[in-house]
Image (cartoon, rainbow, N blue to C red; front, side):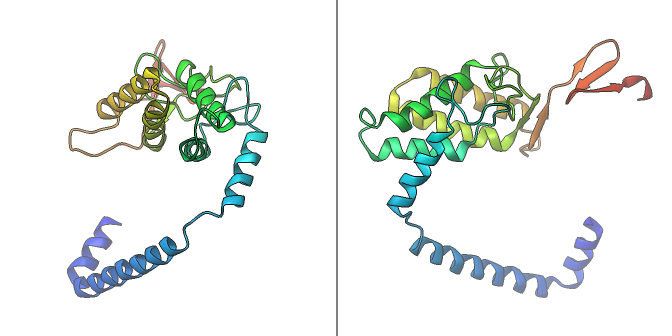
Length: 205
């Protein structure tokens, strides 16, 4: 694939440049059109929040009753709702947000030693993580925790955000300056790797 791209660049540079310029122009026009119609209808926004609250776990935070994913965009909607109004009066969205952030931060989905969030919890209590950490989760959760800290002055949210960023820079950032999208925890026990719940015989390698 790289050889093909290199050959195309050597032989079709002008054509590729024109295509790239046209693509940028199209994206710019699309972006402007989206900005003009990007305001979210208030009744629709309220209905979306009501629907999300209907299946929010009021005891342990998050959504659903089995495996739990952070669902950052949904939490971000609760955060936005808390910012729009007096958050002291807006208890439903704020409670759903802080309950989720609190239980994730104290549970196994958050690496209490190394920092950073695993992709999801295999149980409804955030205790047992799926042992992989994705860059996109860290990128979405850090702003959530920082914004929640600004809103509530909860210092624990700031601590979690800082530790998560430390993890990203330490484990998801290569010496060449490239960010790595995935981190997997591998446990080595008697020449056996345990990852994703599968056994891999190291004697073959």
